[in-house]
Length: 286
Image (cartoon, rainbow, N blue to C red; front, side, top):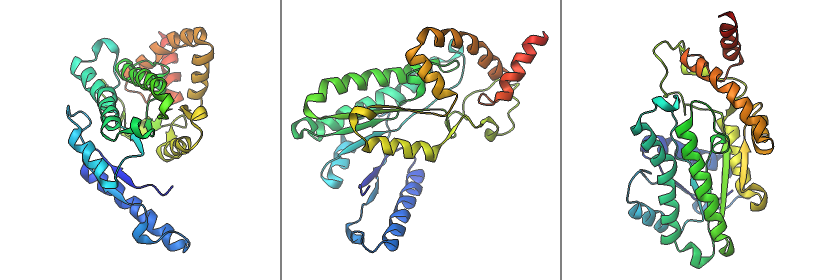
């Protein structure tokens, strides 16, 4: 869309790889279409290291503003997940999840709004990657869901407070997505997972598809895309059920929860139908 990009995260090596890919794509487009703008005026890609958990983000925000004279769109995509039963989740894990998923994005958003004078200039667009877990809490994700519910609540409230001067806030809610996001989560010693790729299935959306849908929602009318659910079936069906028939959804979750917990305890892939069938059969045989 012709935007200048500022890529920020802690892993500079990963950022450089993404930046190189973006520049390559831009060069290919320029070569294939002579009607594009001159290469020296083409959208740029800048790497700006950032630790979202830092208590002071002022200097990084100032640097981002200096690069192009301001920031038009802030995309908050930081996140960390953890799979475990709620009673056995350690305090340090819960605190880290809230810092990365909630406190950090809030500090960065409010800091940029103030330092870049968004309200005075009556502009600004924030995109916060939430999750289906921010709308529908699922078993084994209590702390993660809490952080995403907090994200949904804070930024929805912020949107309502700043609507009169034109601040736009989008909350895409993806999941499950076929990435390494949860692959570093703890599994019991008895886990039968032989490789991370085993915990994939047709119910997971590809990361490229998810990214395209989020980008599309960013450019659509805010009245329609202030919140988007990005998921495949059967997850999307459960989202609608949870939204419009919450009593039925709560009943079903009460039945599904113990099965998902048993599958996790057995080290089975959580997004494969075969895992659920095995758990049900094991319970029936006992």
